Image: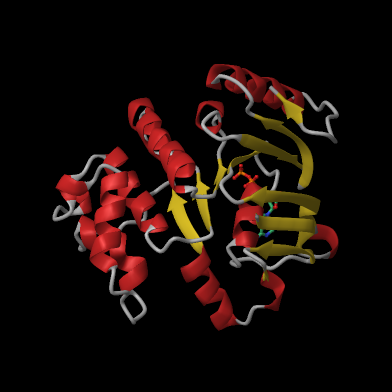
Length: 258
Ligand SMILES: Nc1ncnc2c1ncn2[C@@H]1O[C@H](COP(=O)(O)OP(=O)(O)OP(=O)(O)O)[C@@H](O)[C@H]1O
């Protein structure tokens, strides 16, 4: 099943002399159960793409369909509902609420707008278990390590069973050990729970935990690489593609597999 369908997406900011084309006829799709990385040089349009899928930004032309719904048809309230029910967000800076316990932070998406589901406690227990947070539920965010905080953010993103998790540089604030641990958890949730993840990252190591990377440059689709073998090999192929994209090479068309 297709979760994300981006078709001929174009976003132009400003007009006349200060016109900037942030996205330029970008098309790709993501299927259910994929863990897809979005990479590309600074200014390539990655944040604009995330913001468009999150309905924070509206496209100039083209279409985004998520879980069968065309985002351009949404009213304000439908967008808010879509973000609440279909999306889960993991940000670089965690965005946890300091005055709430870990348990209350995780369940926030379910308690924010009534009615609170009957299985709230079961869902909390399940995601706390999946993310190794069972012993920390009564603590406050400041009593956790940065890696643990990001796992709380991941549990919060997933507790409402959204169609898509949007992760924006989720390892950006973590040291390499905590980053690896988080990525292992995300991989496990992707493989075992079929969570669909789209992750923007600058970091090839982080990207190597995905199963496919879409590279964009100047707002357009540039190339993609798909993991077929060991992660080290996939990492090398990501580094190669980064060199190509930064070196100004031309690479477009069919998927490269490694
Ligand atoms: N609100 C805005 N008004 C005008 N131009 C914008 C706006 N937001 C982004 N841009 C421009 O659109 C282009 C794409 O920006 P975007 O932030 O999406 O890139 P990015 O790939 O996320 O970059 P980075 O990796 O540096 O975060 C850039 O040239 C940027 O300057």
